[in-house]
Image 1 (tube, one colour):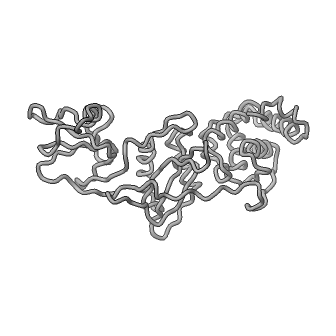
Image 2: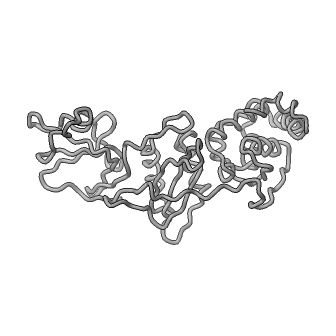
Image 3: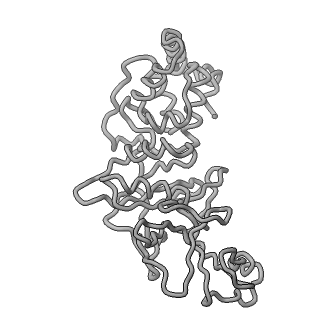
Length: 311
């Protein structure tokens, strides 16, 4: 979101985590200098020390910079883009995630022809289940495919930071200050579960696809997974993805990474990826046939021996 350029007598800098200026187009924290910068917050010495810091760019003794906490970037025309806040840091499934780091990547994705604007936030619509959600405003005449956006993010982000949910909006809601009103962002639509609301799953065509589908059904707690069903559309997230990939690596010998699932989010595509990276495709097929036979049995003890139940 463009927010203009500095007014007269105001010094504005966009700095990195070490206090150095960032190049044009690179996100950083907006800090303000000049005579209008105050001396601090009344009765709040800790916050004053955090926000009002020495100005290394001024020759005036005692000059201070004010750290706004806003994430911005310079445009080539000398104006500033507002990207979000530095204090939207959340802990999801034991991992600390910086939402503005994701927002910076989304700003890059916003350059895609089908995306006009995008923001990320953390939601806990189901108690105990925190999820990263991306809100996208499509460019005129376009309707972005969430699966494609997820793949793009999977190429540049660690797996644990790739959001699984995507919501298309006509516009990002703003508060009275013109910044993103995160409280007004709608909840994602409920994921289709085993109630029969989604189309009839297409059955696997070989043993590798069958094992992937069976493992996903277990970790996602659904009755069946079709070979073209999207892991994340069924409610998957990075922690469940790690569990599924760990099983496939251990019992099929498949050289897969968690990010592989983000780039190939259906059983058909992940099975093809496993075959493509297999040192011995024949051994992969043999292992899949044996594992499939165990997973399809009604003997729960046999499945437990493969460490699937209860993981």
